[in-house]
Length: 59
Image 1 (cartoon, rainbow, N blue to C red):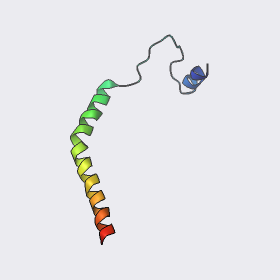
Image 2 (cartoon, rainbow, N blue to C red):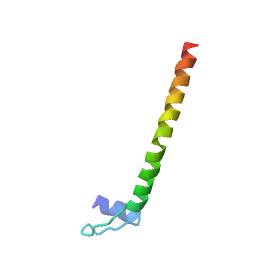
Image 3 (tube, helix red, strand yellow):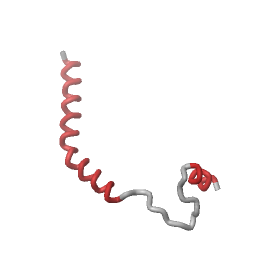
Image 4 (cartoon, rainbow, N blue to C red):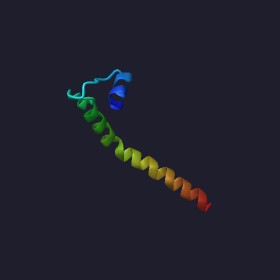
């Protein structure tokens, strides 16, 4: 019942017998591809920042 209230407040489907797809899987796949393509860059930036912090603490 609480879930139905929340769904009603958010203007979502309130019928528990209906299956509702909330994710746009095409958008999810696009996000995953972009994330994977940029993962190496993200790792390099993080590594660079960590290295910079370590160097500052040494000096």
